[in-house]
Length: 281
Image (cartoon, rainbow, N blue to C red; front, side, top):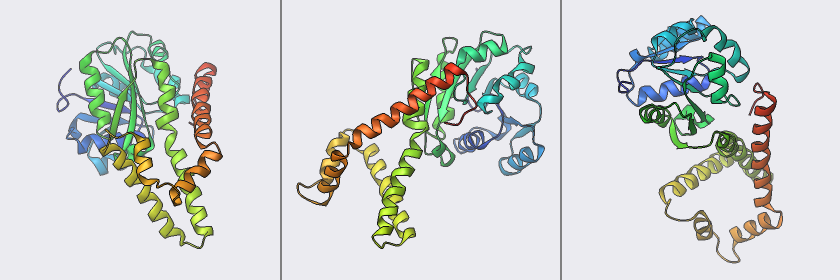
């Protein structure tokens, strides 16, 4: 496989996540001339071509024949339909990357009726502003070079982490894929209470979103400091933060969070087992 500036990368589907990854790649110095995307909608294709100057086609077969890396950005419930016409194309020398939740690497090989190098990637929605978190899993057919280029692609939209057990993809979904929704729920609860105390809603949103952003960045920059130590640095005994933390503790905040993460994890397993891959995260 060639380096990132000469390899041909094809996207099947140009939804929000595929478009976000393409934008991140271009900012990370991948060449627009090496990227092609397919979609049924010519209007959507023309729109993304006008914006990003990448190649476009309505043929998934063309993507597969002309790309060394093929990224499946289709909805899980469409995966089988998309793969069926591609099974007669020799993909054995190519890297396939799927961002579809609930579709395992073995299923992808089975649908395409070939032994394939497949990587599953689970980016989350902050990838749309290049602040994402992506979990990655590679099957046994992937070379180190293929894993390296997959990492470079998704590092263009944020941070990445590998898992060695495909079942851990469900953990990635529970702690990163679904987690932005947890954060928004927490933010909204604080904003709602600020408003009930007479605060301006827009000012409350500005302060809360900036506080979450700043706290997350501080936790990243001070990664040598335990999160509990960062919390204690804000929590003076008997002070206002202390009282808030006590309230969280008295209401079993940690257990509520653990139960929520477990619920997301267990639902991910259930969707795989029942093949309800069309459901939303």
